[in-house]
Image (cartoon, rainbow, N blue to C red):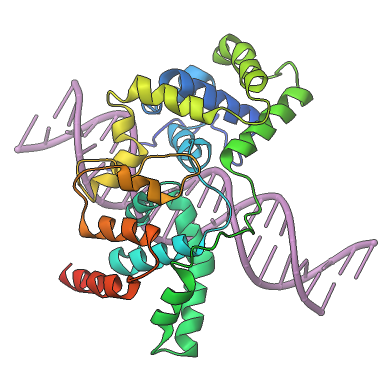
Length: 280
DNA sequence: AAAAGGGACAACCGCATAGAA
DNA sequence: ATTCTATGCGGTTGTCCCTTT
């Protein structure tokens, strides 16, 4: 027998999210923390199904998400990990905590697959080495990062929305209770930045008790079950901050962390990786 | 300047799985 | 032990925007 839909399809809105919806969702999550997605549409008045809310949050609104072009290093990591793990985007994303699985998947499908195919056809024998050399460990900063981080997006979005509609025309109960104070505070106190750091801090404090643990990162890490969150969303830092981070690391994690901070010895590590992949 | 095509990204769909009842 | 529900994941599609003709 077929499973019933995750939510009542009647009256469910689909398609792109509006700034208003984003704000409602963010405000709600700041208040209650991520998780219990089923209750989100009900409690916020959003005409979205729970899955849609979760996806919007994890792929776009969640703090710590880095948007924009992938750095050569990130690219290299994706290539390595894809070779190692296959299309396990969530697992791969767990090594790139600032990127979402959706982002990585899209990037792979639109950029890397072609790139690798091309280099494959160009010179089959050397392609992998070339890819490695060109894509990874050149820790040059990619200055072509053209589109804004989610923080910046939402900041702009909030400002724009507040200007455009000082009184929300679609106030929900939740919105009525929360929006005025909250959004004003957001903008007043952080004129140039939406306070995701604050938001993140608040729920990490408030929800470290469990909700957050089995949400996005938790699940993603579960496949590489090390019992720890090696990668924490940590703003704009590159992964090397994670060096100080933590406990038992798998070989892959060690390698990735080391690779982040060093540019040498990569090929040696790569061969280790290959050995490992053969074992898997 | 306008139209067409292609690329990039956001979002949806359906299946799998874990946990609760 | 079984059924049901909620959530997560990967594949796919839809839409917007940019480039080319």
